[in-house]
Each structure stands twice: as C-alpha cells, then as structure tokens.
Image (cartoon, rainbow, N blue to C red; front, side, top):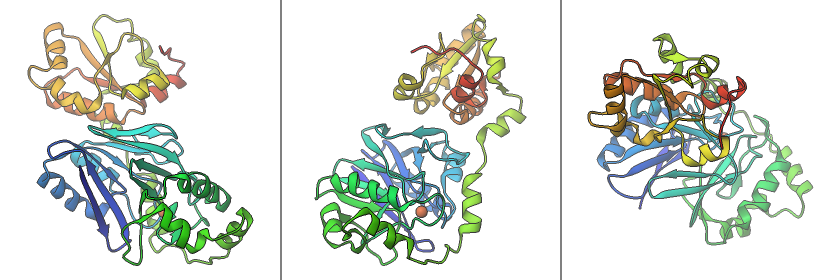
Length: 345
Ligand SMILES: [Fe+2]
C-alpha cells in the first residue's frame, strides 16, 4: 500500500495520499491549494492516477486544492452530503464507502467542529479531519459548530474504534504526526471530562481568535467554480427538463458515470449505459466501446452523473476524442429528480 502524509507548514494542514499499489488509482484527503504542484509531482513519481480528491469538511484556514486538482487531473471531487460547497461532484453519507481501486474507506458522519465534518476509516487508521486532533479537538465556535454534536461524534463514534486504531488528523500545530484512539482516550486533555455538559462548558470558553485566513478561505472554498459552467457556455449541456424528452429517442444514448453504490441508492434513468467515470477514458478513446458506438451508429452520447460535474468533464473528454455530438445533463440526477424525471431501481 502507498500511504503518504504531506504537510503544509503555513496552515499546519496534513494531506494524505493513498493508493493500493504503484501504477494504481489514488485518492487524496484534504489537499491544500498552494501544494497542488507538489502533489501532482508525487503522483507522477509514484505512477499513480488520481481518481478522487476529498475534503473532510469546509476548511476555514486554507484554500482547498479540490478545484485545482479537478482542473489538472480531472479527478472526482468528494465531500459529505451535508457540504454546501459548489465544487463537489460526489457526496457521501454515513455508511457509504469512499473507494478507489484496492482501497475502501468507511464514511463516518462526525459533526461538531462544523456541521459538514466527516471522518474516514481505513482498517487500522482513521482520518479524523478536525473532529479529533492529537491531544486536542477541533474548535466548535463557527461554521455551525456544536460542542454537543462533537462530544457525540468523538465519544460515541471515534472512541468506540479499537484502541490501537491510528488517528491521522487534518492539522497539528506542534509537529505531532499520528496518535491512536487508546492514547487519546488516556491523554487528550479535552477528553478527560465527566459529562457532555462539562465538555460543552470547556469548548464554549476557549476564546480563540478567528483563523487568519477565515474571511478569504471560507468564501473561496464555498465557491470553487463548476466544471459544468464552461461546458454550458460551449452549448454542450441539456437541462434535466430537456433531457426528459430525449429518453425515448432512438438517436440518443444515455451514459451513467456514477458508481454502482450511487446507482443503487438513487436509481438510474431507464435504458442508460453504465460506464463508471474512472473507466471513461478507455471507453472514449479509439477502439473503446463508446467511441465505437458513437461512430458506427451516429448516436448522440448524453452523459449524466450525480450533480453534473463528472459528466461535464466527460463531455470535454469526449469532445477532445472527436465525439462532437456528446453532451450532458446539467445538474445530473439531482436536477433530474427535481424535474420529476422517472428513476428505475
Ligand atoms: Fe477545520
């Protein structure tokens, strides 16, 4: 397995690069914008294909690298379903898996630091974001933070993991790199409370100054910018309402880019083909299934995904591969549902 802990010294952020093997698919957790060149270099050196970039929550102390990584590697940007960030192309909820080839992390909803905080469990280690830090916990005084929710997330979810589970947080300000659940139970001063009320009292009296970057980082991280805006400008998008009238046309093929778990959970548009986004490139290049289909039948490829971001990148890739009729459903299944589009399960 490949596991790298990378550090941004300006914001004291840890970023994690994970893959099951050299040459395989990779995911990155909590990337920092200023470090994107470094990540891309390392991904190249290790011969990895970045498939997913994930933020544990909306960060207030640095600008996320999600948008830049999407633009440069065409990866899928992932956050929890409670996130209000625009750039997210895949949303996860408690019980889902965050998966790339050979790696599957369990998604835990761990609100408290923010209401969109998630942790990811990978067998012997857990990525705790700012929910549980080494000898500390994430502040709960802004971004819909809630010390009660955080107590519940920590005591009733994270601390129930086996004692030897390693903790990899999103930040450390003293140079600590890793801890364990057992160690934090015993030595984290914030966890030595006797009741939830005592924890709330403690968290409500920290009197911390706001992060220096907060006024810049929060709005920037809320609006990273959508890949589908540019695709719409080029005239390669159809609205969900327009797409409704395309489904029974013989000259159209709908292509679902989502993962099997998303299809199961939300349903599919009847009659569509399934090509998961990471397999897109091989399907649209010369000799690939979609390339052949479009070339031999003259049919128009209409891509869709969850929110329209993966499908927007797919349209660009298909256009680049010479498939001039390719377009996508703006806003994805989310918009399709809002337009009362029928879904099959
Ligand atoms: Fe944070």
